[in-house]
Length: 285
Image (cartoon, rainbow, N blue to C red):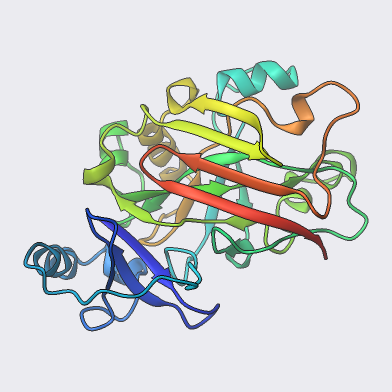
């Protein structure tokens, strides 16, 4: 299933995109798409049954904003340097264990919402990423297979980053990762059964129409199941939590000088096969 949330910010309603590309209203079945729903197999089954029976009313999507596909996210866990090609382009050694950092949940915005360039920023960068949405409470998992079994679905994430704040201002990466609007998510949460193998997805990103990133999750150093298993050894993952699993080569940081960092007026578009497409216009904060 392709689950999404539509409407003005803070007032989104749950919806489903059916196999014919028709937007369907879920508000008569469920209150929202959140961790409580993703952990409720019976409720998800009712959605599937209603969709299969043609019982869901169509919604007019013309001019309708698409919000983040998950409400009330508890935490956004991020994995750094998780692609072999990205490590090579930045001159970094592939990590022996996953590099973990956080984005605040309030950085999450809709897939086509405006991204704000922080005040004083000269090194705002792009990163297309596969986002994993947790569907079952995960703690001390034993295997990568068990990790995959705890995944509700997948989405496109844009891990916008300010490299000066991240690298040159002391402390942890979090300074360059938590600026407002720095995590567009969606358009859809695609359930795990529809995605299949998460290590066989293509990721692409364009800036002002120019292709910058063209990668595959097959290049991940730590695959999705292992990432979920590993993170669960250090913290409890709850339904509705999100893991951004890293970005492939092609970011501005890895390009020759002068590096083409983002500025107000730029347009970024990104997509992952089967998970949909995002588009953001950048403006000054």
